[in-house]
Amino acid sequence: MKTNLLLGLALGLASLTPAPAAQNDTRCYEMRVYYAAPGKLDALNARFRDHTCKLFEKHGMANLGYWMPVDNSENKLVYLLAYPSREARERSWKAFMADPAWQAAYKASEVNGKLVTKAESIFLSATDFSPEIKPAAADPSRVFELRTYTANPGNLPDLLARFRDHTLQLFAKHGMTSVGYWTPTEARQGAGEKLVYILAHKSKDAADASFKSFRADPDWVAARKASEDKAGGSLTAANGVKSEFMIPTDYSPTK
Image (tube, rainbow, N blue to C red):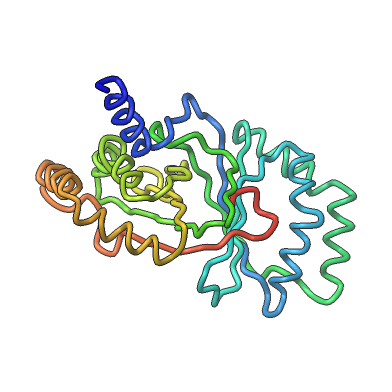
């Protein structure tokens, strides 16, 4: 009886623990955002579905996820790639752009006009507490939340420590799945001041319920107070927390 009780307790605790951190993840990550021309988002997705993703893989790029914002007034496509290194990234893109298969697909897709009006890119490095970052699908597919925190000057190390020591475990406790945590690698993109991460939820309503219970959790209240007392104020800048809910495309490896 005692053994069964202890086993049950251990399994219960394990269910509240986030996935173990990936060790020595030195890959270069790139989050890219494409803004489709009016009426061209379906054609852009078709090009990725039918051509681009396969050619990325052919040239050594790992497709991790493709999403569109739930409220997609800007016709955005957000996607995440991984490379062995930044140097490998440059080689892969050079080979991809020169590939006759890509040039043909690109030309055919833009017979009636350009598909993309603007493209943005941010280079990222996985934090030491991020779970193993890999494609993962669920049935039914989930809702994803892209969150970006901007720390007050000098507070990023304390913010990362709070995530490492408290936040991830509490996210898991309240039903949120951590997909990955990154920091930008270039100063102009927020190196030293930003944390970028993605959560998965069963639904938008589930996300709202999870965050409501998370924020009311005494363990979170205590962890936040201790970290802010140490820093002498909020770890994040005013209006420094951004959130965007996204749904995966039908061809996304992560759903």
